[in-house]
Image (tube, rainbow, N blue to C red; front, side, top):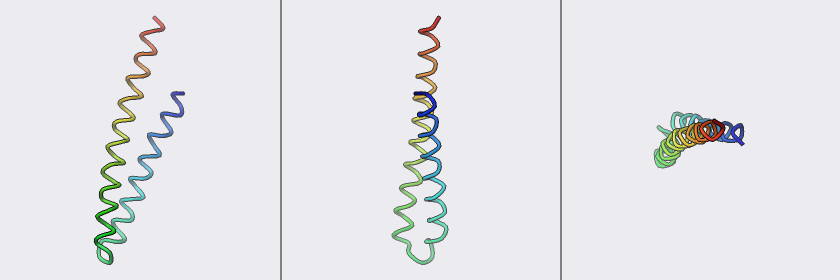
Length: 67
């Protein structure tokens, strides 16, 4: 279960990096589309941090229950 949570964290980072790439390539040609990817990048980084924090709390709770 914990390994799956780690993979989903990095999936969000992948989406963020893809969004940053699209922002870089689309900024001068299609500004409206670039703004959409700015939103995706911000949400993806936020979700990465949220999921990482959630996973660490989950791991800590599991360790505390084993003691």
